[in-house]
Length: 389
Image 1 (cartoon, rainbow, N blue to C red):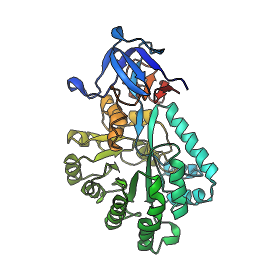
Image 2: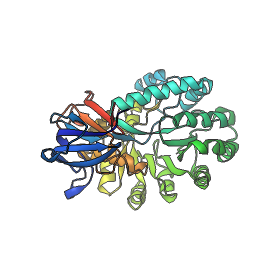
Image 3: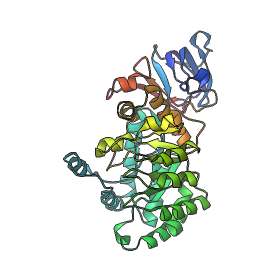
Image 4: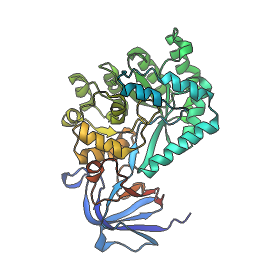
C-alpha cells in the first residue's frame, strides 16, 4: 500500500469540527487538507496548499469527517422482515423479537456471522461511516457471546459486550441465575475481546438493580459503561447511566425533566437512534429539548435486524433534522464529533492536525445536502486512515 503524502484540494466547504469562532462545525471555505501517515497533517486555504506525492481534486465539493456510528448490532444471523411488515400493519414493538435472532445466531457458523459483519461494515463504509461500534447480544451463552465479540473485533476496536440484551428463553424463570452468569463466566470469556459493557435497561429486559450489578462487574473487569435506556417508556436507565459514569446512554426516547437535568450536569452523551423510531413507528426523541439544555448529543444507526435495519448515517442525519428538530449543522456534528464523544475518542470525528485522516467527499457543495436531499447517494469518495476506499 502506497502511503506518502496526499493533498485533498479545491474543497468548497471543509467541516473540521474544531469549534473555532463559535461555529461547532468549524467550516472553512476554499480549503485544502494534507494527509501524511494516515493522519491530518495540515489544513488551510487552497491557495497555500503544500506539495504532496498525490492529489485528489474535490472540485468545489464539501468534505466532512467520516461518520462515527457509536451504536450498532452487526453480529447476527437471519432477518426479521416479517416482523417489520407486521409493525407496519399496526402491531406494537415490544423488543420480544430479539429472541428470534438469538436462535438464528446460535445456529450460524463463524463464517456466516463474519460474512454478515463484513457485508454490513462495507455498506457503512460506502455511506461514509469510518468508525463503528459493534455489540454482541444475540448469542446469550458464554461461547456465543465470546465468539460474537471475537468476530466483531476483526472489524473494529470499539466492541461492546451486551450479554444483558434480554434474558434468553432457557432462563425465563430464573433471571437472577442469568444475571449471575453474565457477571461471572460470560463476562470472563467476553472481556478479552471487549472495550465496553452495555445493558438493555428496559421493561421486559433488565431492571435497574440487575443493570447496576452487571455494569459494576464490567467496570471491575476494566470495561467502559454504555447503556440502552428509556426507549420503550420512562424508566431509571438514563439516571443510572449518569450515576455510573457511562460514556453514553442510548435511545433516550422517553425523558423526564430529571433525566435531562442529570444528563446536562454530566459528561454522559445522549445517543439518539432515529432509525429505530422510523422502523417501529414510535415517537421520536426530542433532540431539541436535549440540545437546549446543553446535553451532548450523538446520532447512530442502531443497525440491527429487528428494530432498525439501516446502515446509513446520512439517512439518520435526515431523520434527525426532519423528525427531531435538529438543525443540519447539529445533526452533522452529532453524527461525527458527537459519535466520537460517545466512544470517548479524540482521534476521529474531526478534521484537524493530528486526527485520523477519515473523511468523506460529498457529491454536493455543502453539508446541508445530507438532509436537503434525503435518500440520494451523496458520498462520492471515502478516505479511511488516509487511504481512498
